[in-house]
Length: 233
Ligand SMILES: [Zn+2]
Image (cartoon, rainbow, N blue to C red; front, side, top):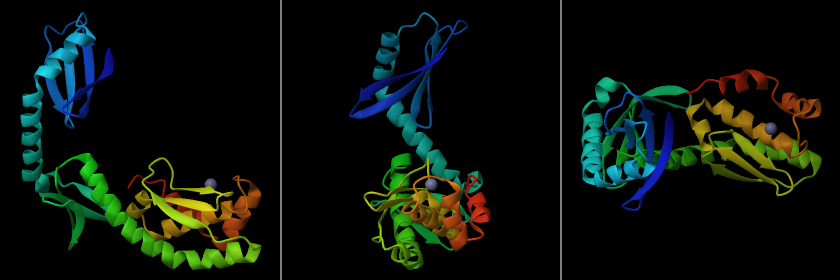
């Protein structure tokens, strides 16, 4: 039996995975991606688990520091990779006073205040937004003209978001388009295809044949490009 319990410790919410099994004789704590995992006997109460983890605060802190150090040491062998504009890069992590993502030849270096998922995401987002803004500035002129001006509708406001469940979204009545910064993992044509897709929604809200007629008229290769987005880069 597995469940998750939340525990606020030192202003941080820990998500504790609790695994209860008959054959477990005692409570045992380990960390997985920095979060506590408890294995314990079936009869062990939630309260007992929370008390146990609460007492291990110092251990959790030490263990996380050790894991971060080990990760830094092994970064070369680990061969962690990241796709940027459709190209794979080796990734390394360096401690720094200000978090940022930097290109170093064929390598991407994350300089991080703390080696946490949140710091990394923020560093990626900031680099991705800069890159994406350039693409949007470059690509939007064509769609402003061919979609908006041609139909006498105002040019949309385009914003960027860190969305992982979709590549873009369009609010027709607000005249707003949102683009996911996650697109920066993919070749630039993908950003343009998603941009056109959202512009087409300014004319047709749904994904009807009328919608795809607009998209394919302006980008006959749309379906091939969109297929690239099905890969998990
Ligand atoms: Zn759509």
